[in-house]
Length: 68
Image: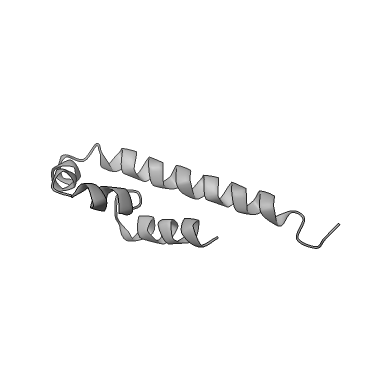
């Protein structure tokens, strides 16, 4: 048994939580007509690369999700 046995489970749980946060944030943003209007102007690449709704919290969560 190694010292890092539980790390995989923790990392998986964190990634799931961050993904859920981003999905929830984007779903909530989609209820805002101004955000939807701005989102319609994004390119397909921007939509794919922008985590969540694109706010600072979503940018941080997207960075964390990709770095752990």
